Image 1 (tube, rainbow, N blue to C red):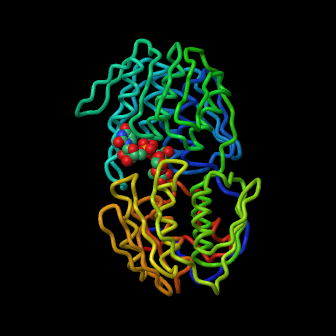
Image 2 (tube, protein in one colour; image 1 turned 180 degrees about the vertical axis):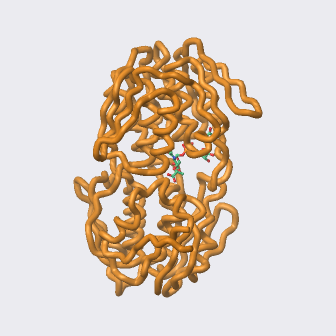
Image 3 (cartoon, rainbow, N blue to C red; image 1 turned 135 degrees about the horizontal axis):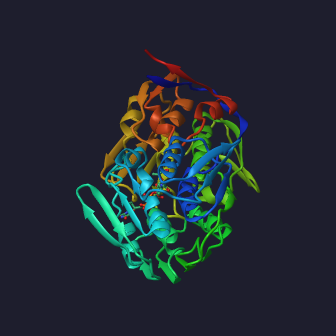
Amino acid sequence: MELLCIEGGRPLSGSVKIQGAKNSVLPLLAATLLGRGVSVLKNCPRLTDVDASLAILEHLGCETGWDGDAVWVDATSLTACAIPDALMRAMRSSVIFLGPILGRLGQAVMSYPGGCELGPRPIDLHLDALRTLGADIQEGAEGLRCRARTLRQGDIHLPLPSVGATENAMLAAVAAPGVTVIRGAAQEPEIVELQTFLRSMGAQVRGAGTSTVVIQGGQALHGGEIAVMGDRIVCATYLCGCAAAGGEVELTGVDPRHLSTVTALLAQSGCDVRSGPDGVRMRRDPGRPLQAVARVHTAPYPGFPTDAQAPLMAALCTAQGTSVFVENMFASRYRHIDELIRMGAHIRTEGRVAVVTGVERLHAAQVEAHDLRGGAALAVAALGAEGESAIAGLHHIRRGYAKLDEDLTALGARANILEKK
Ligand code: EPZ
């Protein structure tokens, strides 16, 4: 079993270029299916979720490959419309392929993506949106069978700003002749990047980043090209690591506006945060403890991102005072709390609410990641803890962090991956 071992109590000092964004590159890879040609995604992070997406694309008939940090996908001729269960299970968000497969081939078969560590992950909003565009979707025990002789334009109303449902609707609507309007759309930066990429393929899309996205669909699309944006959650994670350990870090290759709610709370807790055109610098005096943050409520963008909840909580475990978290996005996104308590944290939960009472110091422990961001939060906590911690469950972390150990080492931490017999 592999363990990420981190020696805590060392202030950070260093600079890192932030990897490409997982939550952008996954829908972009699905979008390549819509182009009759070669698409190129530069600054693509090497993640297991990216590997799983490439396996699905190849199963559908694409050719894919790497060229340095760029991934290319040749979707000129597709040979299948069904995603086997094993590939569906390899990645929670594989439902994002439904819209583009339908849009390109007029039919799609896939099993349910299934729940995950964060609790049930319904896809009703995805299916409602596709049905509005004329898809006939049969839901059976073995999964989804979808047909759409031709998709048609539609007026889609999302009752909540689901990121995935917004993306799936966009990816199907570009193939539907006429004007489709998506109201109540998610506004995440990753949605804007998807619009940019679709435009590079010849699609007519506007309004991404607002609650109303308009697609003029029906054109045949060619391959596109884009440089993937920096990962705002990875950046937030490393800033929380610096908040926990103290020191000074410089993180480049990311738009600081994409994580302004996170940097605002870190500033409120006593960190000195300076945003620049290409990233963020942050300093926290190791001699001055963090201050608690009274309320951290997760919300759809531009609210505080649910993906940064666990890393920030880990940093605030040693803040003076009491911080109150409310996780509004997912039913089960506190699985890191028991592990933080093993490190000496004082946290009480009541449903969606977690009350963090700061302690002087955490101590090292053997802990286990139970999901992607919860695992990253354990690394944040270990950076500030006394002694050497060992984190198991690295397969969760590798879904979203291309080189966590290397990046933390570059930021001055002692972080190594060891094989434990
Ligand atoms: C995306 O997930 C991200 N994943 C998540 O990041 C992120 O936490 C989430 O958006 C919220 O920002 C990717 O982009 C690959 P949603 P997604 O649909 O699209 C409910 C990470 O750690 N809902 O916006 O699945 C749902 O249950 C991951 O990087 C329905 O009820 O999130 C949730 O409560 C975790 N029906 C809420 O909406 C649906 O059909 C928001 O989910 C779809 C969603």
